Length: 364
Image 1 (cartoon, one colour):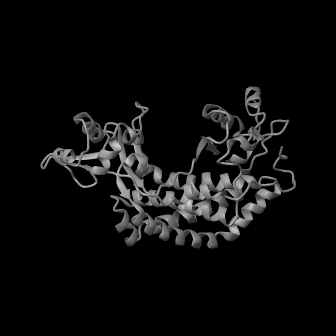
Image 2 (cartoon, helix red, strand yellow):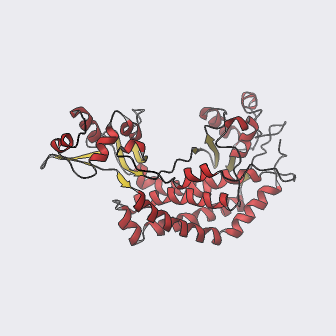
């Protein structure tokens, strides 16, 4: 177990550098693109109905909806779909229209896919520009990254650097900036009863099997990186933990101590041993995140990228580029061994509950 963050301990041993398969999941593996969008990497963002558990991606993967959506990349009549050998029911088309995944033009009786689709040629051009931006950013931020690594190493928490970058510096800050236009302003209506947003599909796909959740509590935010390759407490338990530790940085409730006892998050007295960023260091992280976000927006607003993406707003283009920058930046740092993976994201048998401590941190 790590010492409390006021103590100095020796450097911890890290996991192996990023495996090639994870590199492919982050940057896209060369492969033939299917004529079925359900086999592509599809991302949907925007306001969702809270009354339904279904999400746009589930609709894309239902029945042969992916084939219909691919066939309708160019506007198609029902006769044209039949001539192309695409099987469908009227109810399927109506469902896809209701979800905003198909657009129906009653004047010419055609259906057209609303998903932005980027195949190998376009995505290669986008990722080439993203890589150049990321390499520039990595150089600009190299001193800050070294400082962060040294700070975490001082407290025996160098393994947490992956989580800090992945969950906040490369994502959490940007999502705060996107929130208003992407998630709050769009309204559900008769024309958009289930979802009001935008979606994109990629081939080759990025499919990094790692996510993150942030739990805002008072003036603090508790972050956790989530992966199917490690078992741990549930979301509600993390929410309760975040609330319990936000003020005094201690786990006081005995039931939470029992739940998280093997997770290397606190010491025997209940005091947190995970990284806590306050004051100057909270500001340093935000400055790093702001610089990356600003570069992301600038790239998204460049005429060349806008022409490639063809999205309806700068915020949409910036969110798309944000995801590409996030993975490319992390991949760059991992491949250069600036940081290393805190757990084995591919082989869950090699991970234990005590690895969870390297996947969480707190900012206040």
